[in-house]
Image (cartoon, rainbow, N blue to C red; front, side, top):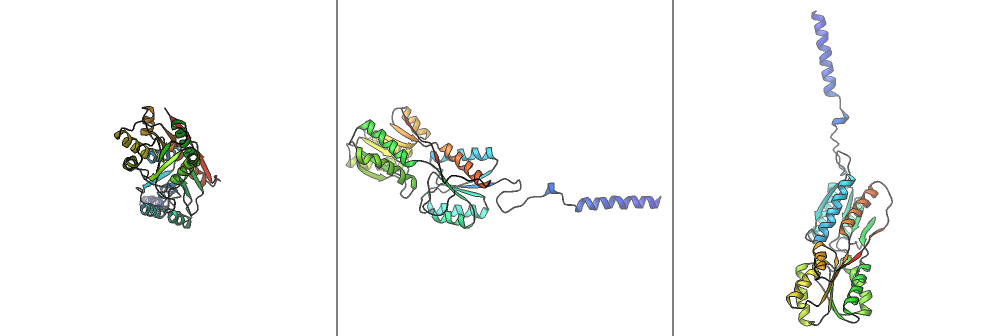
Length: 309
């Protein structure tokens, strides 16, 4: 009996030792450095120019919703309209080992070094809404800003007439959106309107108000204003209403909720709808395609439309 009992105990102890030393694949932590994480999901980094602008907040929300649908991780960093911070943010995303980096540049030139850093790390880059002047991006997702500027100018011509005196509020100098919207506007305005002044207000509502107040001092008889985005347009509108110049026609760009409400109220004459939610969704779709080894077009346009009362 003692021998039987001893053999039984040896067998049990042996089984326990085997169970403790055998590695189970189900318990593998999957600790990886490629940004995918233990569950095998991809991680996409998104450097956005600013989240202090309703347009880019909506764009980010579109990206987040699509990321959830696709089952990927999205890490968003806010550059706060600071060129140097954006470069540092992208470097941080590279160090985190993300699989793709989406960049919405604060400035198309300043962002070059960030794009090149990602290129050197073999991380695909996709530019969103604004392009980069250098480095290699696998694709660019944006509206046709030139066409949008032309649409805005054509609306002004329709509302204020040929050769009317108008002002242009420009976006952040150096950004592709400001250059392209200005180019489109000039394509029409150079032949059909008299642009008495073009001044930057940096895509800011508060600066739009201040710059418009200054413009009115030297050009009190202007009949129309084109602003490169809705924030500046709404600031200009506030300045005009404060000066009793409600008859001046103002056209914006982006179709933010505030701007559309202003159009519906008969204050803002119109805005070019850029569909930021769709831009964010398209950016995630493109990133997912790249991660799965699929070819994508160099430029993925997002349709524009004009919003008027």
